[in-house]
Length: 189
Image (cartoon, rainbow, N blue to C red; front, side, top):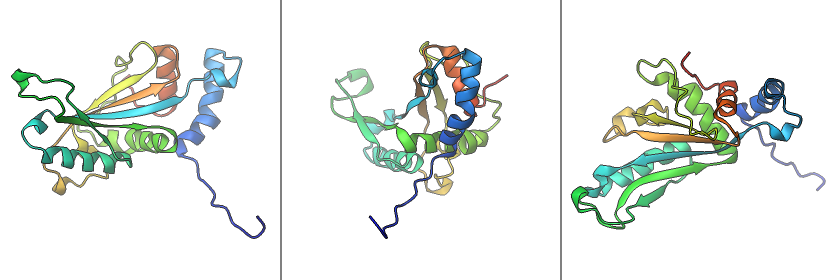
């Protein structure tokens, strides 16, 4: 191994902030006895429903391209499980796309979402703290994909919304909210 240089991996700002600031603060706040008890981000799931894709298959391709640009990962196209005549839906037809982010990509996406995308939302006053599921996971809806800097406004065919679910290892909503607050989530006061 002499003479070979190894590439230095840089850690995400959010992960560094979590390890340096959040862990000690939460250990003090919730009186944890062990560092491993402190909740952490587990995964982030980004889901985009495409109800109008039933009529036009090109909509799915555009949504997949947008989501790949936003998350940095190729999305999974979700398909209808069964036929529903009232919605003109057949089994196996693409009706959405989703991405599950873990590890470094998750921290990078969280950083961009909280620090760059959310402030670009029109009339933004913070997110609601009532969207926790009872187990410390948080879901926020985004009405427009154009809040992300990776999306060029001129090149989109239609404004689409998406759901961003942040899954944590927290046992309660209180712990989950404290974790996200320490990591910069702008909750309404």
